[in-house]
Amino acid sequence: MEIRFRTRKLQKQYQNSREAEKVYGPEVARKYIQRINILKQVRDVNEVCALPGLRCHSLKGNRKGRWAVKLTGYYRLILTIEGEKSDIASIEEVSKHYDN
Image (cartoon, rainbow, N blue to C red; front, side, top):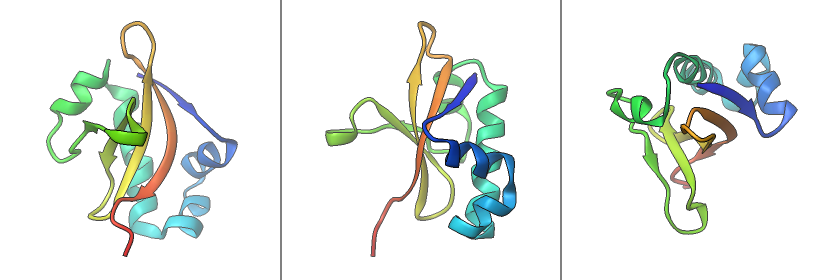
């Protein structure tokens, strides 16, 4: 898949693990970079959803049209799938799924 980032900050966090660690901590930062690297290797969203452990799924409600990929127990990578062949992933945010 082709990867795009909604903000320069998200792109910088992918390119520089220290930037991601400052914001998310080491575990989430590592998974963030790892998941984007996985997205780069697949052809489309169907392949992402078929991979075990990622728990890729489409979102509902006010986030309809977006997808979530598991980073850690609480954190998700939120993305939008674009392109005629659903082969472009736009990284939207890292979200804490259950806000305590």
